[in-house]
Image 1 (cartoon, rainbow, N blue to C red):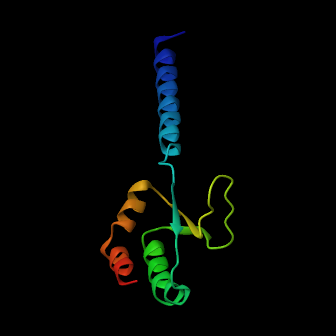
Image 2: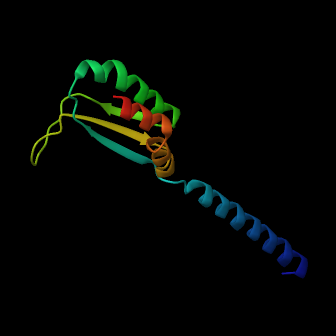
Image 3: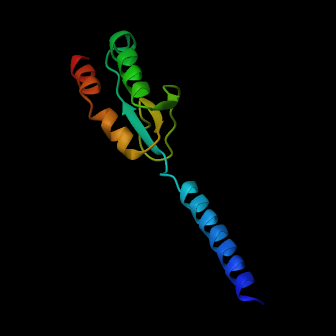
Length: 111
């Protein structure tokens, strides 16, 4: 094999390996964060009218999506929770920022 052919083949192999490496790095995104809330509702009317709309808006504004909200809970060990909510966020950092935000905590204190 001539020197020129060897250099061309080496460059092509390097470009292909580099492109493959970039694809692998892009495919390795952060895993999503799931937040599970166990909620004990003392006053269903206040919860539904005051807390839930504001809390839901804060979750959505923070990038969260509700997967489960309310409904029947079943426990295989111990007491089942009274009410649960399961939310998913793009990352743990976004979930933490949302639940530590002033908007979320103001709503929590007012309810």
